[in-house]
Image (cartoon, rainbow, N blue to C red):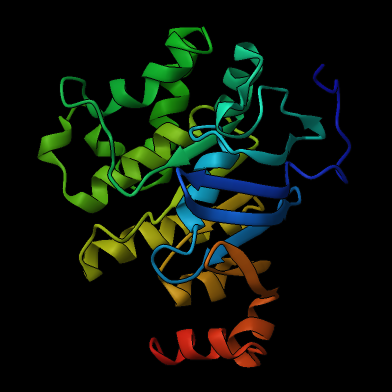
Length: 261
């Protein structure tokens, strides 16, 4: 059963000993991650280390084979084991997903809807909120991310950076407990990337709970309360940004950072 009113000390998201495999390929091999309320957790690591898979498992877009996922202290219920394990409660899955809004690498905007309609769609259709109230909120969020003048535009008329900012406004309009970003800037050229980074930094400054998978080490350093370095499906090292970037302990993290800086 959901918890009625979790305290501020209850993490928004807790992941314990999570395992995920595709057939015989183990992608996550027992990972523990906690996202306290109001904190930004960044996941870094080379391609194939399990970062995006971890985020997708956290949002129940992927089924994991072992381990616990807790949203505000409420454990996901499962049926089956191993590769046959799936969430047991569809209503719980919907509730968790709507409270953990995900922003993907590809913008995933509906091409047949205007920008405003894209932002309004899920709150109206999924949450059954009043359309007039949602429209007011949607316009406010589009203004917040700097594209308030694009409400009536079609996604194809926007630059990549504008489309990603529309996707962030769409996630915010769900009024989620946490935002999950999966490589939000990797599909953008450097100039457009900075537009999105400015928005993410402003959200971090507001104290929003976020988990960010990113290849941008400057972003991870600037906005994170805690950074996790994944390597071959395990947490190789974690700590504050200054600990990981200034005094990395593991040889693998030193090598990884050495290829970037």
